[in-house]
Length: 141
Image 1 (tube, rainbow, N blue to C red):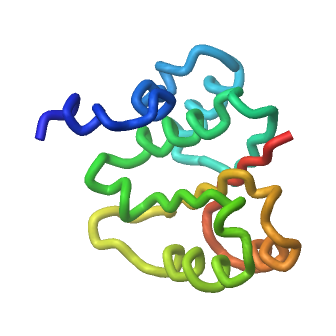
Image 2: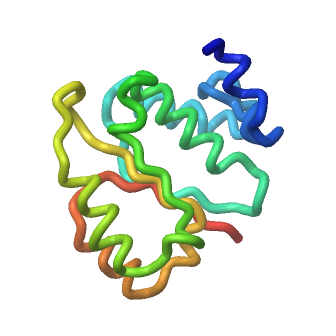
């Protein structure tokens, strides 16, 4: 299937979401810092926060696309909307299982993106502190 055909039925915000760090328009100093982390292969745990629509999710998804090839993306990146999946069961089940499985195609860290992490229960947030994996959390103000 042609790439343009696969993107036809997407919502506008997904269809035109920036696909690389170079496509992002704002926050130049933040983008440069994240780009340096990626080039040096020293990406730390990150916490993005700000009002809706400021590019938090787009920024981290662009980073993930830069870190992993399209074939690796689904096995190395887990994106959860924490306002939907917000309980401790998700941390103990889905997140822990994803983080603990190994892939044969790519070594290194897996990326777990928790969009709207501020909506998670306190028990779930506490359980995240005790789980060894790479985490990106996005908080809405």
